[in-house]
Length: 373
Ligand code: SAH
Ligand code: SF4
Image (cartoon, rainbow, N blue to C red; front, top):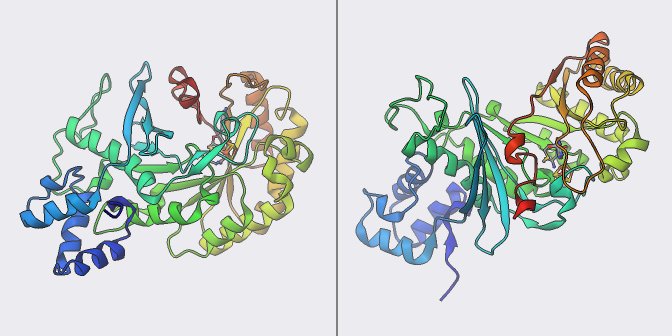
């Protein structure tokens, strides 16, 4: 018997082709797509308007579920949940769901492990196993969308009025999940095809309908990938993990910098802003005694001024307190150093935010829960 098809791995066009090759009318593809990405069903038998024979055939030839939740941790305030999923081949990945006042954000993984190997990152330290498929990326979002839709699960925080009592009537599934960030395990631009297909699937107006403005991709700086992104029709938010203002330091913290040094990275970011009209966010994890001195803040400010701001390209720096990982010598900066760093950037008129550590009590940092199992 041929291998069963992972239905979530299909694009809309591929689904249509499959169903028409079975002799089905073309509107069946719309129906199945709607069940998957609007009604969020996880079983063919729930696809009520399909003929029974078609449901049976789908059940024989294809499957829906690629992820099995193994462990879930909920932060003490109930606002952050992190799930460890098993994939069908036994590999594991993590995804995080964060509830804010007006947003429900899912942070998804794009690879099992990561080949880049940044020394401060739990995922980077765990090595690389394989790329995720588009379906495995999308299903992480569907998991939390179903959780919000079907269980209204909210251990301590009440649901906001827009969500309470919300069936799936007039509002689309995108309102269950308002933002998706590709900031979990792995480097999305080293798994470009599957990542991009997942973004297109989540964005599709016939299905999940999540606007590209509400999707952010975080990269460590894969220059050809950034250039390819800037030529896409859909334009997502771009975050670049910088962590150092000089090549010397960045070569150590982000080994891929040896291949794509700062000069090339900044040129690619500039082109991205010019082609898409969207600003770039730079992520900077503050590590005590490594990258947090006032001189380093000054150099970072100059780098961004010269490469971007002076040529009219807006950018933004997101300062992140490092989440210490087991076995790594890197420690978070003190609050005093962090604030001084931020002040220097602001003095140079670089817009900044300081990210609040979210879910530290549940090892919500990249790759940390997986390392525990
Ligand atoms: N590979 C991509 C996306 C996944 S990592 C990238 O590196 O951008 C998502 C973010 O988490 C990156 O900004 C990364 O630098 C950051 N990160 C990884 N380990 C961390 C840690 N221990 N503390 C704080 N941030 C961390
Ligand atoms: Fe990979 Fe990003 Fe972790 Fe670096 S920080 S090892 S690129 S996941």
